[in-house]
Length: 184
Length: 422
Image (cartoon, rainbow over all chains, first blue to last red):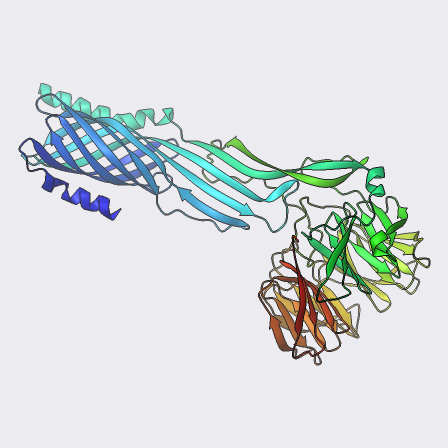
């Protein structure tokens, strides 16, 4: 995780060329899914070349179970003025802290991460040479697996005294994000 | 103006997207439930009965009750049968034979006859020659059929001799009803395990009904099943005669003789029966502090009881209690000693042996029961049950059978260890 943050911070330094320009994007938004509406915060650093942008980012996703997606981010700008763009992000969703319930005979309670994807459409509002505000909307999905194992001190009828549950959770959300982009 | 309108529409569109289409998406959940289950293996009654003899020795896996006759140890293998162990040399005990008795949980010995339960039946076996034991009598249907929670119904025309383990993973849909807290709806709890305080609980099936318990007082063998106390006249040990059944309540599980009384344990307390008329036990009292799964030994006017957590009785205390029995109807708690996770116990003279689970075996000087003095702790094992008499102790632990010589209580010596699985 440390390495990723260092790379993100140093990315602008790699963009010496006139053609390749460093950008950092800080975002806050809402995730609206079937079961709740929650906040998401993200930070992306990357480089832009012509109408393309590529970078890596990290987010704090509060939908249902806290998680920290780390992802690659690709963007394509339409037109000369690069106001409208589409984006696609994908990576791994690391589990954050979650509430463990005290439960008799539970011997394992572990949340595991999974695939993270995000895609959508955005619109830029220029605010000077270096700054732009972005309004974007899209669809995001994060996968998580909750493992629970029970070991009973006595036997369950016709069953062994171990029982393992793997809950494969798939969270689908629409998202709207407000971002602040810095870079030429 | 045109540009402003375009921007406005873009903003409206982007902001409206989540709000308008939120109802079109859903979160999904698939639950992979991995567990093992057991399938019964049946044999006919005739085949099973023909095989009750001294067969080749089997490794000790799940030891239960122990009985000792002379130099021979009879050790119950839960639900499988009885190991015969030649203990002529306690430093080198030999596992010499195995009597196949499916469903066996309990044993008792009088003279040269061993009594054992075979699911619903009582078997009397002549053990005068341990290498050639002989069935002398079988009393049918003395104990009730076992009942199994869940959907399993046994074929009672045959006998279950084993259970074969099968591993499986089933996929269940868990995304209904706002599922987000995982649901454990399919976990059933067995009502009881048959061998409280007597070794690892490893029988693959839950037992709800016939959990036979035996005790011998003079010329009578008393057994309890779920709701009744049965009396067998064993004046002629090889020919037990069923003489009476006494209805004594529900959830009866254990029986313990003391003077001219029987202590009968249920899950809610201990009943005391008077056996001055040995064929017609009559109620003499009851107390509720002690439960059936709390091992008890009694001597003179004092009972020692171990209470432990983690058993099917779902207790919370881990302690040794000393109970005064001056008044059977109203016994009083004399002293409590905190322990780790106590199970079986035994007393020989002033020495009290307590199996304290993972804390090992504890040996007390019990000359003054109000002030027990811990003399020795034998650790490095998980101790469950013990028989101690005549300066010799046989201990059942999680990893095997231990024997000790306590001729000198200050220097208790381990004589041998028979490891489980060998």
